[in-house]
Amino acid sequence: MPDIEPDSVFRHRPFVLFWFARLAVTASYQMLVVAVGWQLYALTNNPFDLGLIGLIQFIPAMLLFLVVGQVADRYDRRLVLIACQIIEAVAAAVLLIGVLSGVTSRDLILGVAFILGIARAFEVTAMQIMVPSLVPLPLVPRAVAGSATANQAATISGPALGGFLYALGPHVVYGVCLALFAAAALLTLMIRMERMAPAREPMTLATFFAGLAFMRRSPVVFGVITLDLFVVLLGGVTALLPVFARDVFAAGPWALGLLRAAPGIGALSMALVLTRLPIDRHAGRWMFAAVAGFGLSAIAFALSGNFIVALASLAVLGASDMVSVVIRMTLVQLSTPDELRGRVTAVNGLFIGASNQLGEFRAGAMASYIGAVPAVLVGGIGTLVITLIGTRLFAALWRADRMGGDRA
Image (tube, rainbow, N blue to C red):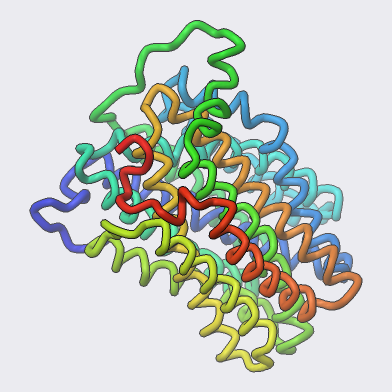
């Protein structure tokens, strides 16, 4: 955990508990992703199935995003998180039992992916909107970056640990994931909020769609969410990492773990920088620079042909993504009134899910037709095109200065 300074977010016990809970749950999820991806590719030898996992996880987010926002705004967000972590623990237990009993199949893995998609749809939203309630308001930008350090530390350690543990057998990975999900639920249970959610509004059609209505009135929030959607939709590479590890670099699951960890290394390094040196001015231009760097890194990864260069390219990709994540999350959280934060964040979560899961499906489907390397290369070029177009389409975001967003 980072050093504690007088104005550090780590002086606040609720945030510390949240930080460790996020570390545990994200590490476990990343380990599951590595193990499931390798196991499914070994079963089918079809990169399309790797993209299908992303699509199946996106379907619940797409169907439930309005419900997710209502739940996050009307109920105890801490209890929502605990319920999600329990469901994820059950999913890990199902995979563990499947391996031990020898009944693991393509359908079982895809079914578990769907259940995980439901839990993640609620968990991601609740986790994001809890951060402003864990620390005093002046520390929220630092808390967003500090929360991102937990996420990225887990994104580094989870895939690498999952890849190495897989060499001992998939049952070892799934057993460790089960324990980590349970630990995260216990830590979340111990959190006491510094600011509670507001009283519930009466359920009407207007309150149900209030998140969408707020986004329509807020060009900066709409711009930052939409730009991130299209950039990651085109430039994402993670779904194809099993193909690169086995077929391009002729290596085993340990290489997949390192490839998945590399973006986390870059992202964690950048998150630590942003925790101490937050972006105070020219937030919009920093956002566009970050997404351009994301696209260039994807192109470099596709053309690398060398394992070390590929790792470096993925690290830069992760660092670029972290800048855009912190800017997006801070703008959304500080620009949105607390009574709407769940519904707006749920819409944001839908866009994130579309960019990540549908991006994985796009990459897997394209790779099955033209190959993994061309699929990543085309996506990276598409990201740069979207970035250039976005400077005109999202002019309000380009001009955005301070991180307080529209509400400032």
